[in-house]
Length: 456
Image (cartoon, rainbow, N blue to C red; front, top):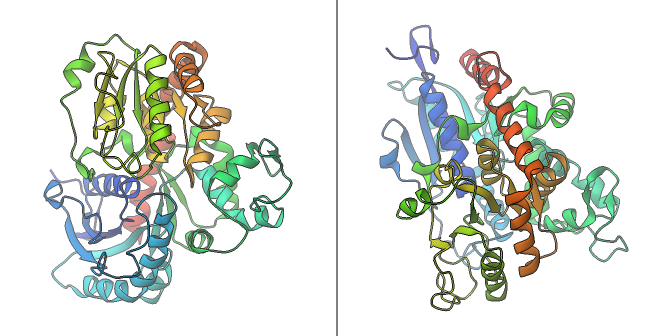
C-alpha cells in the first residue's frame, strides 16, 4: 500500500527540487528526493544540461532540463573545471537561472493534470531562487550540503575580513588561532580561498547565507549529536526551521554517480583482513601536480599498508590517469581504480581508514560507517571540515603541511593503529545509528520535515 504521508485532502503533493550540477551537490539532493518519494510525495527534478544525471536510474522522478546554453556560451569557456573556478560557474549559473527559472516554475505550477506543488527545494547556492519563489508565492526550502559549522563560518566572512584574516599579506602567522573560532587556525581560513577583495566567491557565499536565512527552511546533511553547539547557534540566528537528516543512512549515492563505477576490485578487498586497508579518494574535482601525485604514491607504499586508491582521470595535472607511476610501482598490496562505489567501500570490514579531501559528503559517509580519517583538504569548506573532524570530533588526523611522503606514511600508520581514534569513530557511528531509531533526533527530523512540507 502506498505511503499516504505526502497526500493531503485526497490529492498527492508534488515537490520540485533543483540541485547544483556538481557531484557533491547532486548526490545529497537525489538522496533527499528518494527519501521524500518514499514518504509519498511526487518528485520533479529541475537540472542543468551541464552534468546531467542518468535519468534512467530514476524512473519514478520527472526531470526537466534548463540552462541549456552551457557549455557553448563563451563566458564559460575559460573557467577551469576544478577548484575555485567552480564558484565562477556558480556565479554565472545564478545570473542565467534568474532569467530562466521563473518561466519554468510558472509552467510547473500551471499544469492542471499534475499534483499540487507544495514547495521548491534548491541547493542553497542557487541563491537567486529565493526571489523567484517569493514572486510566485512558492515556499522555498534549501539544502545545505556542508557541515553546520561551515555555514556559521561562512556567515562570519565579513567579520573575518574586517579583522584581517582574509588579507594574505597581513602579519598573522598561519599557525595562529582564530580568536572568533578557537578550533581554527589562520591557515584554515586562508585555505578556503576567500580573499580580502570582493570577487565571485565572496558574492556567491554572501548571497547564499542571506537567502538561506530568508528561506522557509534549511535541510542539512548531518545529525544533531555531531554538532549540538552549532545547531544551537543556527536555531538562535535563523528563524526558519532546520532539519538535520543523515542522507547516507537512508539511500546510497551510487545511482547518482556522474562517473562509471568500478567494482572489479571487490574480490581483492574481500580477501583483506579486517581494518587493514586504506581507502584513498580525493573527490570528483580536485587536482594535484605530478610531483605531489608521486609523493602520495610513495607515502602509501612506505606505510606498508594495503590500499585502494581512486585516481580519477584528470586528477593529475597534465597526465592521463596513472601515467606518472612506473610499471609495477604499486605491487600486490595496492589497487588503483578510476572510480568506486564509495559508500559500499567504506562499509566493507576490510577498510581501516579513509584518506579524503574532506569534502562533506565523503567526510559524512566515513562518519556513517565509523571509519577514521586522514584529512587532506584542498579548498572551500574542506579545510573547515578537516579541522572539525580532527580537532573537535577527533576522528581523524589532519595532514596540514602538504604532501610529504613521510608525513603521509606516518599519518596512515597512526590512524590504522590508534585505538583511541578508532573507538571515537565507532562511538560516533553508534550515536548516529541511535538517532535513526524511533524517537531519535534524526528520526524526528525526517518526520518533522514531512509534516512541515505537507502543511505548506
